[in-house]
View 1 (cartoon, rainbow, N blue to C red):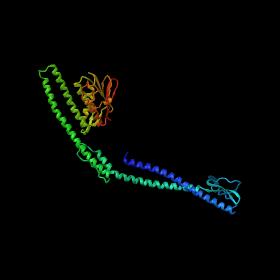
View 2: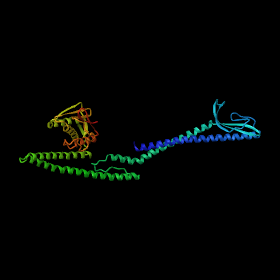
View 3: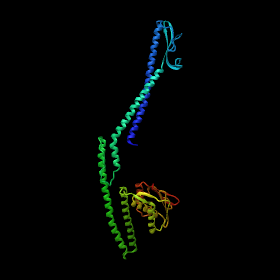
View 4: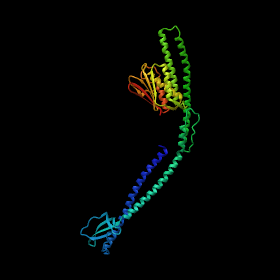
Length: 411
């Protein structure tokens, strides 16, 4: 949810609650005030009747407003609401009634005075409606002015946020931040500038270090490899020395491969593969299978129901296909069958296996190997996962019918 909408929503809720509470409070306050006025008038009328009776000036009743009658006992005063028929309106009307018992000139009287309260209710409704119209009008004006003001105040922040989305480590251009008169936004711009400069510097140093280490390792490894090959090809080795040198040679090859794959991983994580082009995955996997058939004894079966095309770096697409096939061949039994299926927008690669993996959640971790019997670098699937994450492909593993199945969805 956007910031402006969130703050506006909070303003709406608070205002709505205040409006409801204030309206209810006003209603009961005015209603009570009007009732007190009606009751005050009743007591005034009652006093006038008492004076009239005391001076023998009143000998009649005017029902239903005033009702005077003689009684034999004095009872408690009663103040209540009552309903009386109004012949002029031909309907029942609500009255407020005060009944008191008085002893005047040695006579006991029951005096009832009543006052119509319908007009008070009309006044109450008019006041509440007027209040609601005023408060809603004020609320709407404040809401739109507050929203416009907040939008103007936060505009530098939103523009800077959009500018930061285009930030690239590989670019030397500074982020085009918008200046603001707000102190906090100005300080934020300063910190962003310092932080991005530091990140770029660290990135360049790390990139240079990685490239230097990778480059410097290649030459010594190649020299060692060449010297070992010369020794192996000589005639002075016994069987034990030959086995040791062959083992060393394999370790050097593995080290060279690990160096290459770590470099690729670093470049992927640093977004150094920015080139996009249309790549036909089905054709590429077919080429990869053909290459592996020349050096592997495994049987590889490939089928497709449609062509899969994606936008990505072609070099990474080749690595993706190569690592998937290499992993399937390495973990298949000798002369085992590998099945590759392109269906819809998904690629399925399966190889035979006796048991499911013990820790499938660690499958894409660097240097993870299910067992030490396989001397792989443990980086192949890690690279596959990073490539999928880079282009938002989904990769999944499951074990079904004695087959390890990897599925990549290119949607």
